[in-house]
Length: 197
Image 1 (spheres, rainbow, N blue to C red):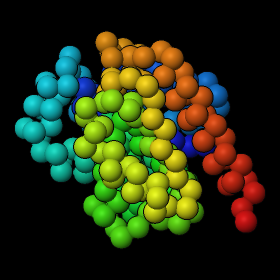
Image 2 (image 1 turned 60 degrees about the horizontal axis):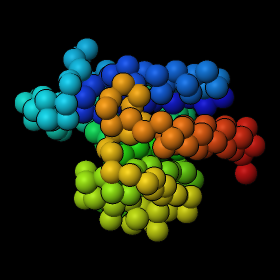
Image 3 (image 1 turned 90 degrees about the vertical axis):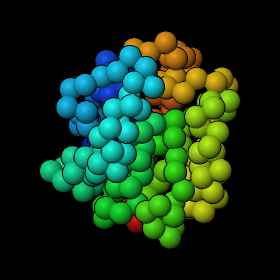
């Protein structure tokens, strides 16, 4: 089964992020959930952003990159919102990446290189009317247009962290579909690793 590193969002390693990881584990995948906030969780996006501003956005992202140092290179990088930044950076820059799932966020590929790496499948998942994703939508569309194995999934609604079951923004129907697509993606990555071309 696939090995996954899952980075949490700006509210921290919440019970909902852990529950999402547990669903992937229940399907047989190995999932690492590094805590970039040293045990802190926040009740709102604003409180989490205040912490990130204090710690430094670059420092928080660098914590994610450092967290991957002790892991195998052949992993799928997954990130919820803020966590999509280290997930995307590692998928683009760390040799051996098996894939990337960017949930609720995407930044321009040019932040970490000139193009998305060949042979690294990627999916971006967000709600179509999420005001936070509105500024990422162009980057997501450009990524999908420029990569050979990339998909953008837009769900009806306006919630940002809709896949975190511990938050008021949770949307069970969209989260169920996202989880199903995530598991299908991981199974496909696993099959590709078992049958290299």
